[in-house]
Length: 225
Image 1: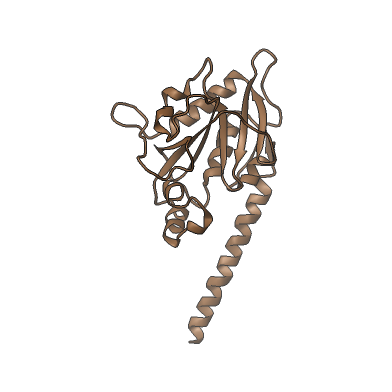
Image 2: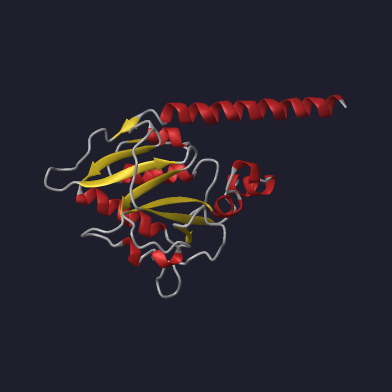
């Protein structure tokens, strides 16, 4: 019994130490700001947004411009509402099980959390269309150059898992969050060290936009905007 209690104490101490290092690393590394200045010029400015629902971040882009028509990649017909009067597309990446089985935190199960945490589940892109964007404490507007935009575009397209014909794979589900969203199969693995917000932060970093060194939380992304 004494050995069992000692082992249990070591396990608890190890978990506490891990949690301290994990949250501490995020608190420090997410505050180290990269690319503080935008590359956007007066001649080439594209408005984009960084959006959060309080936990998960999305990158919001114009639905179409000279460099990309997103409705050709993610047809609005794949949404429940099929509303053609949309101006923006938000994209986020994450664990497929979280997206489809956990619309609210109360729906989270131990199985879903473990699969996501250990990186053994599949991933998905969540696409949401908006007719307009409203700036607030969870939605930040910024301007970027066409070069930066194209980097974001390529990052999103490269995250897609495609069929034999090279087309995005729609996830057939009734688990959409509203009338204007859809899910698509994605590449990569979600885990404790690479979350949906890490994916967003990496996209911003690649595009030379304000970002942190590393983060797993939405605040680590939003604080730079």
